[in-house]
Amino acid sequence: MDFIGKRLVHTPEGVRDIYGKEYAVKQNVQRLFGDKLHSYGYQDIQTPTFEFFDVFSREIGTTPSKELYKFFDKEGNTLVLRPDFTPSIARCAAKYFPVESIPLRFCYLGNNFINTSDLQGKLKETTQMGAELLGDGSPQADAEMIAMLVEALLNAGLKEFQVSVGQIDYFKGLCAHAQLDEETELALREFISNRNEFGAQELLLGKKIPDQSIQTLLGVNSLFGSCEILDRALESADNPRSQKAIERLKQVYELLKIYGVDQYISFDLAMVSKYNYYTGVIFNAYTYQAGSAIAKGGRYDNLLEKFGKPAPATGFVVMIDDLVTALTRQKICPEPENRNLLLIYTEDFDGAVAKARDYRAQGYAAVLMKQEQPREQYTKFAADNNFSEVVFIEKEGM
Figure 1 (cartoon, rainbow, N blue to C red):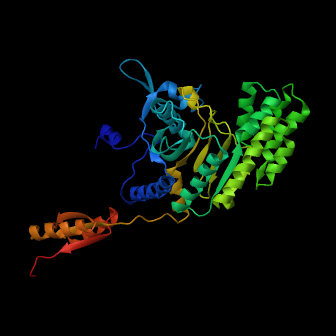
Figure 2 (tube, rainbow, N blue to C red):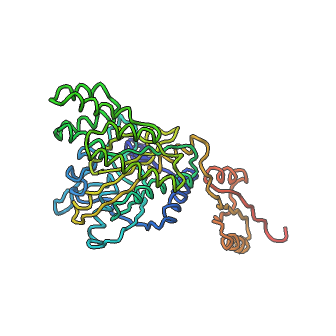
Figure 3 (spheres, rainbow, N blue to C red):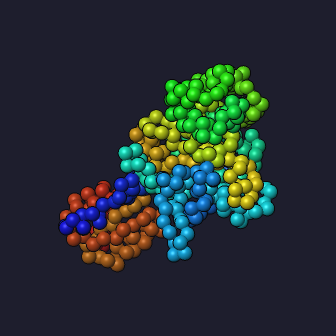
């Protein structure tokens, strides 16, 4: 094989092929997770793989431009491969349901594309599954979204995990009270997100901010743990906006207890998302043997308005590849039912076709193949290619 031939059989950095049993396992996890979303009445929606650049622009508050895969159509419009499903679904809802006042429930499955640095070691194409509840601004909607995520993770086979819940409006209230400008707030958000207290302190000390405001902002890093931290956060909240945010969290937690999922819930008020469209309750799901959050979500009450439909909304996304990896490393990945049969015949083709038809009628997937190699070759092929069994069909009367 020449150099060009060798290059053609490889994939670019950040993408990979999945096949055989590995792909069957991934599809099974997707099915189990999706079953729970459908049980809550969420209906499937499919949006385009690429959209106009403006759908994911800085004004929308989504992925930075430098991380987008951009290209042009024949008319010169700038298009991007989808980095994030939420803006696409917001656009879709504004287009097809512009005056609908009853809440809409959608769920989705597909691949997204983010041009991350090769040094980060992350895939640039990943599979995501998620849900969006549009048109409902109530605490009940926040609780439904978090409870459904917990139940879907359990249904997919995960046993030990935590959903860490925060409130972006709590942090924004503190920043507004301290009269931080937008640039400083974004820089502080980066430090807080990375748990870099020294960087945050240095940033704030360089501004004309009251000492009490500095202490309150830096104190956000210590506000994580069980529901008791909500009372501490309420005491340190120095403005009505932040106080209201904590009261909302308390309401949501009481509702989660009714759902019976409170044992999976913790709180983290230093949680700030890189997506600027989030406006209220936000949450991440974590489990061991996973390097980062396997699911993320939250409330985004201002996003649909940017597409012409003012409406509150909340949603979440689960990174299917990360979930499968965690389940596999924890040795609890649910095995898909394997009904793939390899049928090997010698001479009686008519009888072999009849036998294959009988298996297929019983719900098996049957591959029919004439024997031209030793039996052990077919046994090995079946083991390597996700067949549950090899059936050697003998000629009738032998």
